[in-house]
Length: 365
Ligand code: PLP
Image (cartoon, protein in one colour):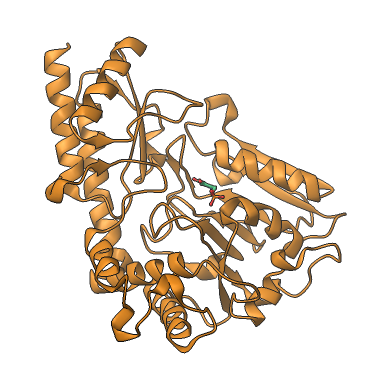
């Protein structure tokens, strides 16, 4: 890749836009004449407060977040919000429904089972090895459940919801960690949208929660303060010391996405990139295989295996690494290869990978 950088296909933390990295570098030691680095600023100081407020305002503009939704910048990542969602939306004697489509929704359901009387698995694609998404008409929703949880993009299995499921007026909660800001989001269809930023947005250390304001303020009595979305909202996500630096870098990414044409433009680019890779896999005559139901193939995470077997896969991964394609190894739970092609992966990176794949196939057919 240009500038001596690798094409980084890591699932997260993931590649960042080079222009954002360069801006951070320019401002690193002396932030815009303030005499300080953002790394050193008090989160209560004037300069940092402006950075934080602009980031939220830009995110609201970029996504089109309605005024009756709070935006929270939280530590603890998506994994913490799997627990805090339950504390904010349900009591200990309540039920919630979980659509289980892969490793991350399995985790969300297991976390829910610790806190709820009934963490109902209302639908699962386990029998299809998590290669598809059960149709919403088959979901077995519980009477009176407090929310329905989905993972909008399964990072490991590479399956992605293509539409917002109609859950009949229930509160929809979505883990968008791995497809946040990769396409337009109709926020009004959700009660809670949450995710870590370390894939599509910024460096690790921050989770963003977008929550409808009528859903907060009713936490169960045993809720840790740090889990309480109302407390966080009332304190502008500064009840304690926030993840200042990653919030700042995320803000630069929001501004860049606005400048680059917003989420519609991003989606177009992501579709083009994903098509390049899926077409290469599908036209390889079965040499490379992606197991996912075509209707639900992820635009972000593309797992694939080599039909030639594990030894050939090892060779492929080793040669790819030598050629400057970083972190293509599949998740340890599924093996094979996986290319994560988030917003910041340039199309040239995907094209370079595809040309390497073709070349490898020609040499190892
Ligand atoms: N949900 C999904 C879909 C993920 O890909 C990840 C990956 O890290 C997580 C949740 C966990 O996020 P975090 O590490 O921010 O807790």
